[in-house]
Image (cartoon, rainbow, N blue to C red; front, side, top):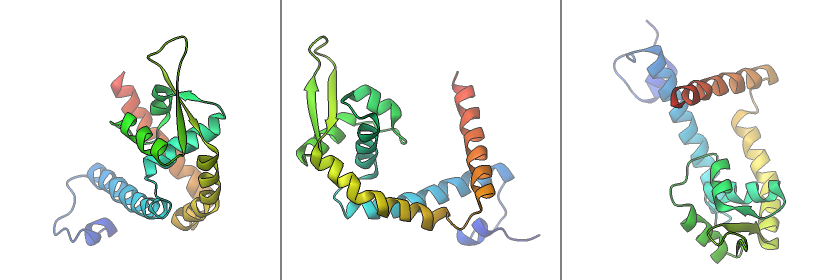
Amino acid sequence: MTTHQLQRELKKKHPFESLEQEVDLNIVRTSDQFQNRFGKLFRQYGLTSSQYNVLRILRGEGKPMPSLEISSRMIQVVPAMTGLIDRLEKQGLVRRHRCTEDRRVIFIEITEAGGDMLQQLDEPVLELHRSLVGHLTRTELKDLNRLLEKCRQSIQNDAT
């Protein structure tokens, strides 16, 4: 029996208990390594991955958004959205506005400084994406996207 790459990387003496376990752990390990690389890039700009994600959402929307809406669009679940926004506001990258119709709703908007920071990050982020998965063919990338979406869909179906 051949030893699989992940088994060697983890120096695991025995085979995985199932192919599903090996795939799940492969996804987690790959995600962790990707996140470490992105985290290193964002730290150079004084940001976290989650802060970068908030700024990208705001830039993409092009107008102030309620913090709950931003939270629902995040790539990774963020338990402390208020603290995240606080830190971005302290850096001058976003502004808060209270809704006049419903005082419970807080709108968040990206500042010029936040937009400038994203502009500085655009090329380095694209380059990092290319370095992480650019060696895959277009067909492989499409297949990988399709399979990962299929995995998430099964989770969403289980939740409903």
